[in-house]
Image (cartoon, rainbow, N blue to C red; front, side, top):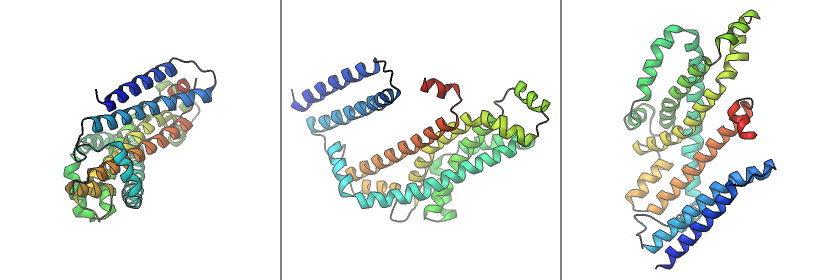
Length: 288
């Protein structure tokens, strides 16, 4: 049997046993529990990388089909400036700008929709229709309208993030019960007072659900939009270009950077959710 396969099996069994032992422990210290919660997925991820490396080398898979993690890591180290320029163009310009604009606009329109039954019955069905439009069809149109630079990618991200925020916020604003609303009316609270002190806090879990969904949609939308026209920089541009050059390790390096950035972005939103909705049963249950 190939030595790579033996090492992969032994490593997998050892990691599996360690993770099984960790998840069965009941640590009283909260900091230790947090470290264990982080260690378990890290061990699992490292195990997958080790098995990936062993399979590629054990089966002698050509790099053009599937590069080994060590090869991808070497490309990450050697192409740092290029990867940073692509990250800055795609994530810091297109994703962040489009995410803030799309989510902010969706939230504002949701407040207006909540005030107007006409908009609620007329705009939401249109929103569901637009959200079902294929991104590969919308992206070329945005490029023609706003040009090849990052502004067209922002437009695509805004379209992708606007309607999830709109629908979730409208649904969240109706989450407060009739008894709670009646109580606010007995206090002679105005519509804005009821919104800020009752309905908006009840809607925060729905709003953050949209923010977390949009944190991944924004990155996907910006990268795909770059396939249809962009300056000679950007994650999507680099992926499409390097595939044509058969530099698959560079493609995987861009994918790794995008995955890491998306995971961190999602994690930041999740941490903000825990800070804002600390009173929610799901958050209190996780902190018990």
